[in-house]
Image (cartoon, rainbow over all chains, first blue to last red; front, side, top):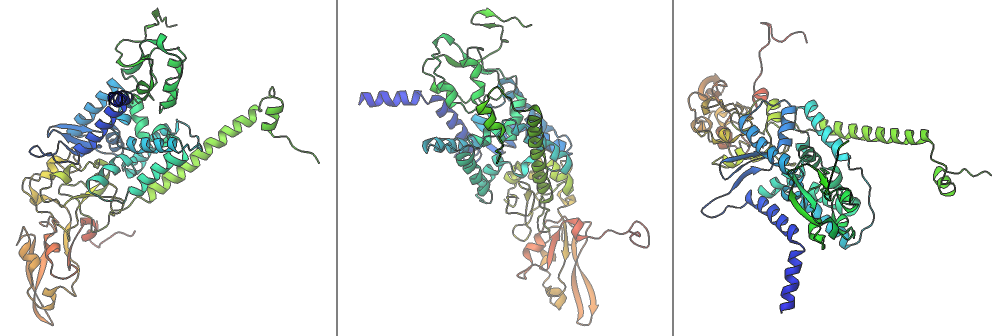
Length: 286
Length: 234
C-alpha cells in the first residue's frame, strides 16, 4: 500500500509541470464556458479578445495587429488589452502562450502522444521557418484583402467558438490538424506551421523566464530532455555545456525537460541579469 | 550501355567529391520558387473564396460599413455575450459571413433595440461604433416589402401585422392607401430614413416566407444618380 502510494507520488512528481500546465489550459478553456453558481462566468469573449473578472480586458496582439493592418482604426479597450498581453509575454517569454494557454496545444500534444504510443516513424520534415513565412503571409494578406487573414482559419478561436456555440462546422479542420500531427509530421503544427507561435516567439524573444542549468555538473549528458522537448534545438547548447540558460525564443517553457530530468540539473528561473558568467567564469563579449 | 552516376551515388563512392555548387543553388532556388508559387495559389484561393455576406445576414446595431467592419471586428464575441436576448451568433464555417463575425437573422430572432445598446458597449475595437447612443439611429439594414403578390395587404386584406409590431410604428413604417383595380388597398410603406432594420416586421410576417424582409441597405435601396438624368454613361 505504501509502495503504491510512493509510486503514485513519484509518478505525479515526474509529471508535475505537465499536470500544472494542463490544469491551467483546461481552466482557461472552462473559464469561457462554465457559469460558476453565484459568481457567473469569469471570462467573456474568446482568446482573440476577452473580458476577465468583468473588468480586465485582454486582447491578442496578433489578432489586433492583423486588424490594424487591414485598416481598422485604433480603439482604446483593444489597445489596453493588447498592451497587457504583449507586456506579459514580452517580459516572461512569448511562447509561454503556446504551451500554457493555447487549447490547440492539447490537441497536438495528444496527437504526439498517440504517435509515440503507436511508434509511427513516418515523418514529413518541414522547416521550422515555415511558421515565420506563414506569419508574414498572414500579415501581408491582411493588408491586401482588408480582412483578418489568419482569422479565416485560426484553429484557436475556431475551437473556442465550436465549444461555446456547439457548432461543428470547423471540426473537420481540427480533425485534419490532429491527423496531420499524428500521422504526417512530428510536432508539425505547433513546431513548424502555426504563425501565432511565430508571432509570440518574435514578441517574447527577450523573455526572462528561462530554463536554467543550475547545477550543470549534475548533468549526466543523457539528453533525455532533448528527446521530450517539443523544440529540441533550444536545449542543445545546454546539453553541450556551451550555455547556462535557454535563450532561444522557440522555447515554450512547457517544462517537459524539467519533468524528465532526474539529475536536478535544470530549473525554471526568472533570469534578470544578462549572461555575464558561465560556470563562474565571466563571459567577455568581443 | 553507359550508366549515369547520380550525385548521391557519387557521394557514397567518392565522399571527397562535393555536390556541385551550381546544382545546390538551383535546388535551393527551385525549392523557394515552389514554396512561393504554392503560397500564392493558396493565398489567392483564400482571397477569392472569402465568403461574401449573404443578404439575410444582418450586423448588430452600430456596425461599421461592411468593409470596415470586416477589418475592425476581431471576432471575439463580446457583443454576442452581452446581448440580453441572445439574438447574435458568431459565424461558423457553415454560415454565409466571414468566420467569427457576429450576425443575426431577422426571421429567426430580430434585434429588440435595447435603449442602452449593450452590444455596442461591449465591443473592444469600435467595430460597433461607440458613437451610436440612440438606438433609433441604428442602421442594421432596411425593411423592404419584397413580395407584392402574396402580401395580404396587397390582396385587399388588412393584415398590417408588420406595421403594428414595428418598434418605431408610424414613423418607420405606415399604411398608405393605394387605389387599384382590386379597390382601396392599405399598403405597408417603409420610410428608409427612420427604419433601423431591426427585423421585427420580418419576424412577424404571417406568411410562411416573409413578404417584408430586412436587407443590408446597399441591397435594399437604390442610389440616385450623380446627375439629374440618372446614372452616368458608364
